[in-house]
Image (cartoon, rainbow over all chains, first blue to last red):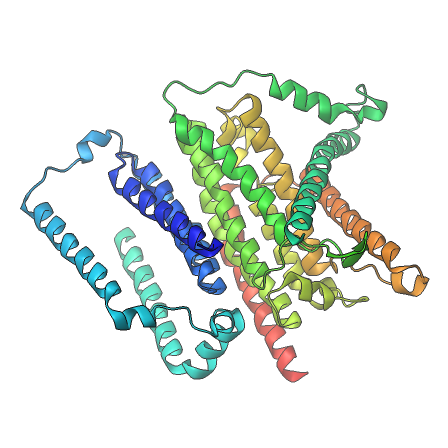
Length: 170
Length: 337
């Protein structure tokens, strides 16, 4: 076993444990903290795959910006008694458990198939593909039109949110 | 061997940094005393030079009080996040050129990553958790208000901070801090090439480090002591330390991005051996940092605190458009040249 494999399995274990802790915590703030830990683990896994840009963006955008907003909103909601938030196991939950079990089975089967194993190896040029320069080049040269279309879509969404938010105050 | 050198570098950098931070506290107290026509602490040691040690001893032996209804786990976690983020940011900052020591060619930078600036931005965006969580976990109204203020403030100023750096990145053509410093050789400092970017970055740095005139999260006339009201003993000391460590790191980033980093003009024309050139560069870097820290301190005792709505208006309606304008102008000039 080389160092990379040990590192990967410890990070993966931490990611799964933090994900489970995130959904089992009663306290929503603690859930947020474990979700942040989970995002960090995923960022480290990206680093193992030589995708430095994606790794740092994962921390910058998800752990640094989106989760701060989550925390901000949970603090403002002031949920108070946490036991009131618990749900009873109904038919919806049972179906959800069955569906996630099926999904897990699918992932395990999918990963053990011979052709997916070959595809999941690290690309030989992974070191060059993961850099900021390579991503910038493919975004602004190779895929310029889709990039601009997505930018327009996001801009439209931002304008729409502002219009909707302003309406309520009038 | 590589690993041992890196570990030695980490220990030396952390030691120098903590020593500097301890004496920045003393510098702040003496400078503020001078500005207010007082004398300041001068009893412990010559001119009060042993005061930081006395302060640390006092704080270590103080009782650690946790409010009854506080969330113990998060209450303990918050100062750790604060100090951890403040210290790890320094890892990518180059504090000198290569140096030849005992036959080893050592690069004076702990981690040379090719996403240097993004790493700094990512870590500073995490610093807000320490403040917000400490405010929430204390289960008390003033810390909560301080925590909420800090998260709103930091989100607002992160944007203009990130945008004001882009001009520097465009000039150097790289995200690596090393390349950015090398691009500023001689007098090609970015403060001259990017004056608007420099001003917006410095203002955003004041807001990100919660220093006056932007210290709303701990505004003492309104919020007692803001987010760390319910902290005492060593945990309070960690918050105190992380505030000054943040200031030190912010000064180091400003120096690296805009003031030429470790570049000392004309040092190569003196004809000194390479070893001494490197030493002069390291001390030049430290000297620039201390100058900016002194600037931070003087500003604190000169400008009154902003009102909260003024802070938000400045961030969104003034800083952000100026940073975008700077970006457009820089892009245009680079295209034309």
